Length: 168
Image (cartoon, rainbow, N blue to C red; front, side, top):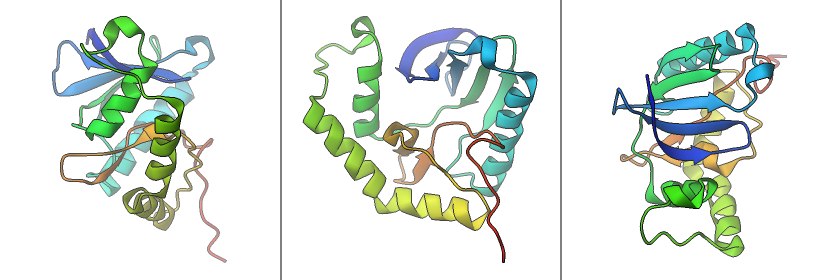
């Protein structure tokens, strides 16, 4: 897979179109030297399992490599508000023509509304029902697809962000 046009960037990863597969995206981790084989495997298999359990909420993972700390995933059409806010993370030369970045008040409102959205809360509850606790503070890791379903667009490391619920 070849890296295409950038879609978004965060503190940990950059997301771009997959130039060879228009129905996929590439995620590359910025911390290449810190990524160990078990982390790559953890993200890959946890993503595969979660996609089987929650197919409408977790994008399919197609490939993962340690050499580039890269993952190829199903491309979802996400809500316009998510796309608008995520473009802020890109260098200005990648902004669409006429793009006006959100001001701080718009950004804060987006974060508050996204975390409070019933669909995001329902997805977090569904994670909890299958024994996964999500400690994600980034509103950009939650989006909505064309059907209005909440989609978790980040990866999950089996031992960092997830804990089994105590049945007692």
